[in-house]
Image 1 (cartoon, rainbow, N blue to C red):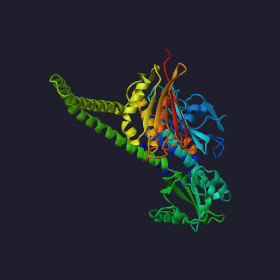
Image 2: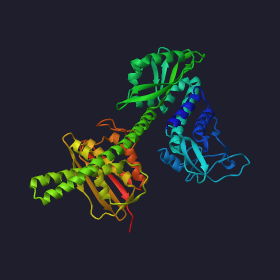
Image 3: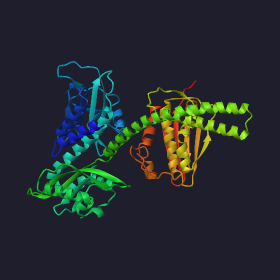
Image 4: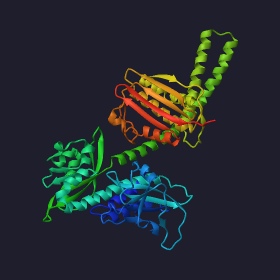
Length: 525
């Protein structure tokens, strides 16, 4: 991931200033080519959305003649980027069900069998082009290629939008406010007196500030005390027509926390060519920064997992001795007619040692990297093991577990470690939502029809607000009622469940509680 971010940052530096669409596409295609030299890439804009009504493109290889006059996107590409399938084809583009290769090594070279995947370029939800990657048929997908395509498409789309706005600012000053109203990026227009003149809707949405609070406000007041000298220097240099490197600011974010916005400053000229003010065009880097933090955190967890395995090993060695000698003492005391109280004490030692050994064995099973294959599992057993993993969290929350397991449920075909992760996350969330005085968490399993089973995790906790319900599966989104969650739990849970051919639904009401239903397929005899 750091290599991807570094290459994209280099492309961002190459497209500073008044970069054309073609230059922007070329910079980001080169960024991908540096990361994946054996993969072929094409980034193309729809002729309906390109500035000169023609196909603007950048590719690592030649475009096949039959594809030269049209730009296509697959349904899978739209889904990959989280965009809904449109009722009609995107403007100036073809919508395909499967990917069709478009690149060849040279104009006269033979075509070669290839596999490919694509993602859309979009501005304000409108698809304007496509980023495609192709590799020889049968070749494995390079590591993190899909992540790199999504990040590149997002950043390239923002760069295209930013570049166009910079160019239009020179000629369309009278229409600037209307354009910014619909721009899907944070933008400010500041006069020579440093007072804010125009604010984009995206900036208002990100910061939670309203236009009345920002109108005629000194732009320096937006920055923290430690950043004001840097902002003032950038503003003065932009007013004087000097090149200003992009800089990042930490601003209060709507709903709490901080947003990380990277701004590029450009002068705005009046009709006589004099500098009338500055336009600050931003990119929301919040999720990128959070992603970087998650990568670091994941590395820490990997190290912690290795340490935990060693600790478990060290615990099990003396624990085995305790268990063996405990069995010996119990047998000896029983034969010698020892008092019942002494026998019960030894039995308690043995139960405690068995409990510790069971926990350490389950801990290693849960933490072990998931290289195992899916196989038939008893759903009730998996759920009960997840409860065991969560024992400490359940005890700390004061919640009570109520089990309502169905009898004779058919087995589900799944990867045990991944299914554990699903239910551990849901039970932990239910514990975190529990009222301070404790609550009830009801676990229900039932057969649906002949070929599906469902698990219902229900709590009577604080509930989730209607606005938050729309975003519960978004990566990095968290209500953060207890601690500072990563916001990745439910996103990963949804991914695991869908990878197993199932579905997940959440229903919640503030002050009443939350119900999560996981439905999984089961083989039919």
